[in-house]
Image 1 (tube, one colour):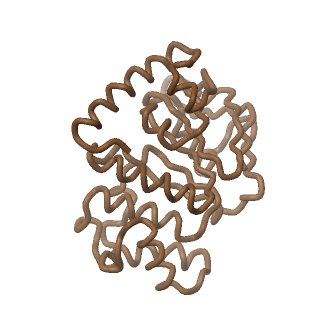
Image 2 (cartoon, rainbow, N blue to C red):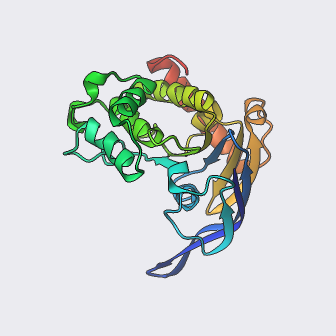
Length: 249
């Protein structure tokens, strides 16, 4: 579904050209959940935005198989409050993409989208400030899913949420991935989050993919690069914090 080959992404900066992504190559099969993990500034979000067509590629290529239209690729952003219009009700937020894509049966689709993310019809006419952080992110997920995409891009979808809510959203995303057969690309700085949802993972550092690995290798501590091992140690601390404040996902 996604084929990235020798992708470079550069931007002009004050001190010269900034090479955000260098020589990145990977493939994502249809229906697969794939992770891009790395610290802030590693280039993972820039690469994700390039997959979504929001950031131009300087060289190399990204091909999206049979999912070539904008309706087929949708994105969920990191901050659910910033990504929702503060003066739009949930109803208007979900109705707008339906109108843009020329889809019918708006009321039916809106109610179904809310149910799919665990929110009832009573939430339709609330504003973002009347919702909790987790509820806002559920609305953002519903907005992405309402046009029935084939590819879902997730940019740190839990990092702006309380730890007690993160497991709920991760469980929701895993269920939606399986139910809808979505191709998912998840970006996170947290290896535990990526490992929960994804089967294969690319580790990024300073714009480069330094290791391709998978969930089983991470569970068995069979990673090759020292940077991946550092992320794994940090993730183990995160999991201990999760266990003290909320049930494990």
